[in-house]
Amino acid sequence: MKRNSPQVDEHAIADWPIVIVVLSFCALSYFFLLQHGIVRDVVRSASTNFTLYFAMWIFMVLGSVLFRLAIDRPNFPISHIRLSVLNATLFKRTFEFLGLLGCLTLFMPLFSAFKSAIPLFNPYSWDPTFIAWDRVIFMGSDAWQAIHPFFGFPVVTSALSLGYHLWILLIFAGSIFMGIYQQNPVLRQRYFIAYFLSWSIIGIGFANALSSVGPVFAGPLLGLDTFDAQTAYLREADKQWPVMVLSVQESLLAWHRSGDHGLGRGITAMPSMHVALAFLFYLAMREVSKLWSRLSLAFLIIIFIGSIHLAYHYAVDGLVAIILVLPIWYLSGTFARAPQKRGLSWLGVPFWDLIRERGQTRASV
Image (cartoon, rainbow, N blue to C red; front, side, top):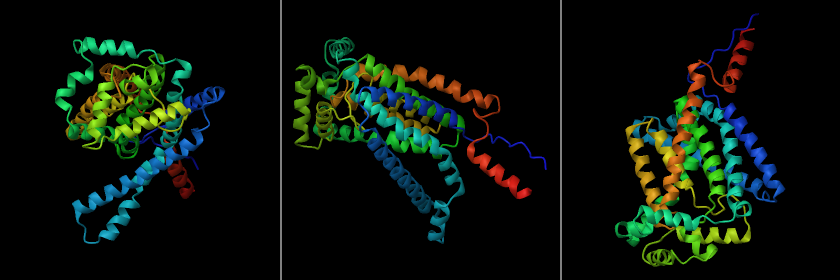
């Protein structure tokens, strides 16, 4: 019997080119770091990272089910929940996301290892330059001093600290949202191409080339007293309202001094990946809806202001990050749209559709 050629679903999502490139990069990075003795924590960190992604997936699935339950108010809620959880489309998209999930699981621990190893490759030396750049922009003042009259209140500082911590959701919830719940295949591919390029080019490449520690670590690591007044204010504000970043900053300093290269470790200021990822998510959300666009823009502003006010970054760290993300976003759009213009996915039919096609063929024989 003659088999029919598999039909390419115009809404199908082909991730395998991204997966191949990212896994190849991870393999090369692993062996590079292995030569420098910086990979002892990568396996443990990858396991932790996968657990966090899995927990976030469970949370988002249950959250979406409960949300629909509150909106639809079905007569048989238990049956409604079962059908929602056992949704074929959800499992199909989750299955298609596994390749990218593997990339995300491995990539971030390797990024953390690179980040913590920056001073081994390029000693911290750019901070005085970035301090000078900030003072040019703010007419002789440091960036935090220029914005302090507007945000220098303990309750505001505490709120900014909380918002700055919520940034971590862009890594976990944001990736799952774009990977599973985003129905536009071009936007989905564009986002993940830009995501991995941003972490690689900005977070590894430029961070190594422009090696710096940021205001809060300028004193302990470089002996600069420029930001002692800022860190003193943060400690005083913490006595009235909890400033969550202080404990994280202390941990980062301890990990740096002990040579811990685990997940989330490492100190670097320029460029700001907090601002870069928040800006990237905003660019993606502009194509989702006006509501998401406005919310993500507000979050970007909170992260940018928080990065300065909480002593993590100079203002130029965020500005350079935004400038670097823009060409990456537009280049990623070119890559993501090219296969769709030809009516094909990058490597043909996605794996899920091949399995379905083979099952249909066998059933018809």
